[in-house]
Image (cartoon, rainbow, N blue to C red; front, side, top):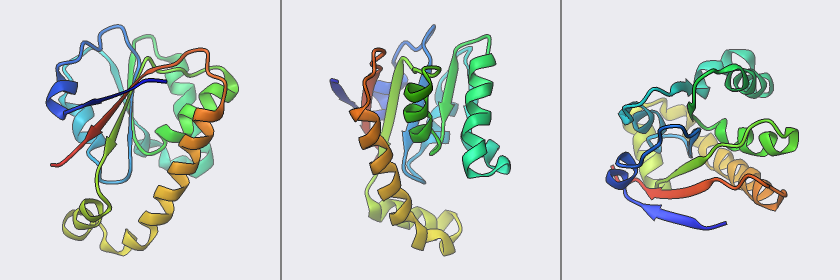
Length: 156
């Protein structure tokens, strides 16, 4: 799969109409912010809004919502990694475009220290290792519906 490297400015100029978009990235990478910048008719789905169902069930709730959506979707959140893998395994979710936001570990920790719950910093490295494993699993699966994959170094 070809990976395209773009800036935030370039991503915001993408024509995403009639495309299903998934925005992924580690905690505090700017996923929600980016999803809110797009001006489109997409149904925007924030996976964090489904965490009330628990870690495992929340992914299935999001999948069900995506499948039932009558418009194109723009999905964002850390659950996106699991959605990609499960979507191939179940054959029911294949975004047209995946935008992966990348930030340094230092940036992530600084954001948690200044804007979020500092107590959660100790869990961040474990989360990132888990996401790396899931994305590695995803790339090993046979995927007949390869998305356009865009990496963005977010230096906000």
